[in-house]
Length: 128
Image (cartoon, one colour):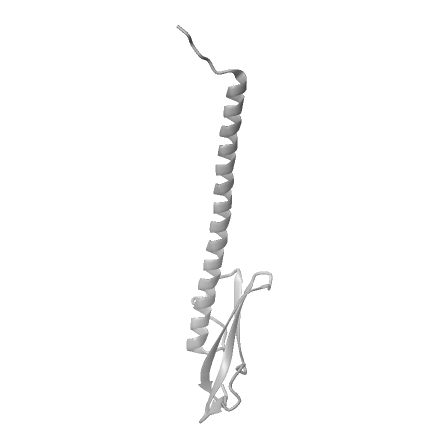
């Protein structure tokens, strides 16, 4: 009976290859977790921004957003009107009591750092 056993070198090489495979898998899992956390944060901020934009489109920018509509304590939101950019030279921005403006909504985190900005052109009553 001729038995063939593994040598110590073969066992050490096999363990090294196994270890490298496990470390590579763990590295991929960690990177995946980080990308998932980043995507979740971006989705949340976009959701908050869209919610604020919808409120300002419906209610106007004169008042702040009520807490029951915007319950995010770690964020604040502001809106402002400005003159529209890149209009054709022959186009008026005010017609018959209505005015074209660009509404810009800014989302800030708790530190006051701007997280996102979103702009939309809209028509409002002249004087609002």
